Image (cartoon, rainbow, N blue to C red; front, side):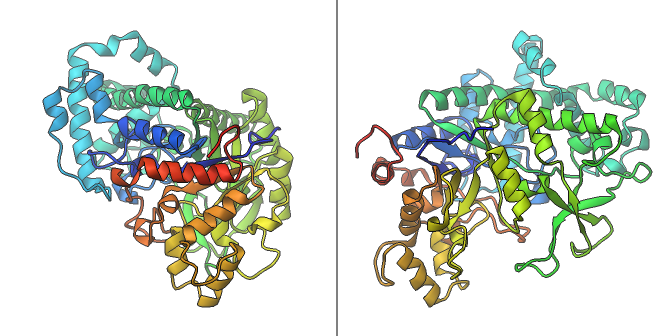
Length: 516
C-alpha cells in the first residue's frame, strides 16, 4: 500500500470538536467548527485531527473511547445554530440557553440542555411529517447499523441503563419475535434516536464540504476495541468472545505489566474472535470491520487506528481476573486483514498508533502496509541516544510527529512537572539548541523540533500552539474522573496567533509555494 503522506511535508493541529469555543457549553459541528477551519486555513495548516465523535456517557466520564456505539455520533456535538438554520428551532428558543463556562464542559448540564433542545426539534420534525422526507428515509435505508443502535438506546432507557446482558433473556439474545415486539412498542422512542443521527449526518456533510473548500483534511480516530455494553456487541455477539450461556465476556482486553504499571492495564473490552475456525464467524467479523472502516472514511480523510499493535498480537486476560497480570499474547489478524479491507475499499489512509511496548513484528506489519507511525516528542528525552522518538533517529519521513497527544500533559505542563529533574530540563533545552535560562517557552522549542524534523506530517495539539499548562490537559490515563473537559476560549484563536504559526510552519517548508 502507498502512504497517504508520501512526498508531502505539512502540518496540522489536534483539537477535539468538544474543545472548540461556542456559547452552548461544548464545541459543535456548526459555527464552532467552521470558524476553526478558517483559523486552520489562516494558519497555513493542512490537517485537523479530532478524537472519536461517538456518543459518550456520564457513566464513563464522557470519554470518546468508551461508547454505546462504534458507528453512531454524539448528539452533544450537534449545533443549535444549524438547527435554527434548518428551521427546527425558532430564534427565541435558540437564544434561550443556559450560561456555560467557556473554559470547561459541564457534561451533566450540557447533556440535559442538548437533550431538551433535540426533543423540541424532534417534535417539530414529527409534526411537519418530515419523517417521510425522501432524504431522511434514504439515510435510514443506507445506514445498516442504525436501527440496531436506535433500539438499543431505547431499551437502555426502558431497563434503566442496565447492561444488555441483564435485559429479559429473549431481548438479550435477540430473539426475532421479541425484537419485533420491542420495535413496534418503542417505535416513537426509536425514531428519536434515528433523528439524532440524521441531524448529525446533515451537519457533518456541510462541515466536511467546507473543510474541502479550504483544503483542510480531516483526521479521525478508530479505537480498536468497543465497549461491552454497546449496541455493537449486543447486535453482533457471535464475533466477540462472549459466553453463550452467561452472555458475559470470556476474555477481555488490556496490556501486560511494564515500566509504568506493575499489574498492567485491564481495559475490560470483549475480544474479537479473530482465530475462530467457524467460517460464518470469520466472515461476519470481517464484514463488521469493513463496515466500520467504510463508515469512518465516509466522514474523514485519514484515520488514526488506536492500539495498532493489537492487530499483530493482543493481550488476552481471563474475564474473572482483577488485574492484567495473568494474560497471554494471542496472534492477531495481521496483514491479511488489512489486505482484505484494501481489496474492498482501496488505498487506506491510516496512521498507525504504534506507541507503548512495540515489537519488531509490529514494526514489520506497519512498514509492510506502508502506514506511517507516530513519533511523540515528550517520550524522546530519557537520556537514551538510540531513543526512536528523537528526531535524529527517524529512519523515514513516513511518520507523523507530535509534541504530545490527547493522553499527554501539555508540553508546558509536562516540562514543569515533578516527573522531570532540572538535569532533564537542561538536556531537553539543549536538543532545541537552547540554554536552561533561555526565555523561549518549551512548547515553542518542541514545535521547532517537530517542524524541523524529516517527518512528512507534524501534528501539534492546540494547547501547545497556545502554550497552555496542565490545567488545559485533555486526558490523564488511569484517572477515572475529570477528563475530556478542556475548552478553548474564542479570545485565544486570534488572527495574530494564526499569522505567527503560519510563519513558523512556512520556515520549515511545511507550506509549499507560500511565503512568510
